[in-house]
Image (tube, rainbow, N blue to C red):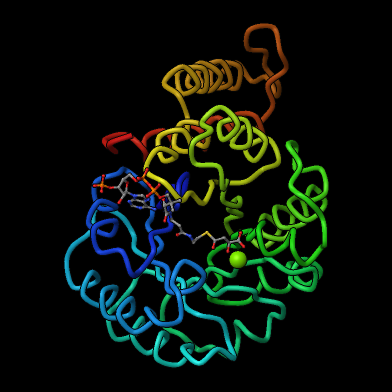
Length: 277
Ligand SMILES: CC(C)(COP(=O)(O)OP(=O)(O)OC[C@H]1O[C@@H](n2cnc3c(N)ncnc32)[C@H](O)[C@@H]1OP(=O)(O)O)[C@@H](O)C(=O)NCCC(=O)NCCSC(=O)C[C@H](O)C(=O)O
Ligand SMILES: [Mg+2]
């Protein structure tokens, strides 16, 4: 089984060449070169050229491109460029129907952004569409569309966040949590990462270098967790060798599902060894 961790997916504005260069060195599990909301209309062409250029060289992680939305004046040229330049994935904003993903016919993995109420309602079908690798939450757009306000615990968004996790997980795709705007508030960022992890997200989209290490840590597996997983597997194997159907580890029940989960934890830990953060 090949595991590609997506603990941190770093957005980088396509019109900031310096930030694009820096992004190569930050230890994010993926980089999303943005042509959409981070780029003003008068810079769209220059951003597309920068991104095309950046895709010519080798990167230490997968590089995705967020294109402008369907119906925008830039959508066609953006998509052509992504296909020509060979990005590792295409991030499509404001996806509301599974048919949108089906109609695209792109030859790169698709990451669908869920950031409207209709997108949330149709998330199960969108996630299940062939070619879709994962769902990314766009909480800024979603909050605006829901006519809600920022809230420390994201209470107004909880239903949508969980709906995205459930839709993605049911389809075997990756749910990725939304960005946290306040880049000078690492404590609140870490709290939001913890919440996202608890909800079941596989990783978080981030917007600043300082957010990468925290996302990698929170959505990753620590050495202590890996050792715990190994201990549980050893206890399970010993019990099975004695013909038992259940075991205990440190006083708690262990069944096949727990051993399987521990195996996944170990595999994920191994997949992140050797990464910079
Ligand atoms: C958020 C920022 C505008 C903050 O900018 P600034 O205050 O200028 O940052 P710093 O001075 O702290 O930057 C320090 C150095 O780090 C580099 N940097 C900054 N951001 C990035 C980045 N994302 N990737 C790579 N490198 C970055 C700077 O170049 C500085 O480097 P150096 O000069 O060498 O010291 C800014 O961080 C930023 O623009 N972030 C990305 C914004 C973005 O991509 N937005 C779009 C995606 S989020 C979205 O659209 C929401 C979603 O759709 C929704 O609906 O929710
Ligand atoms: Mg958005």
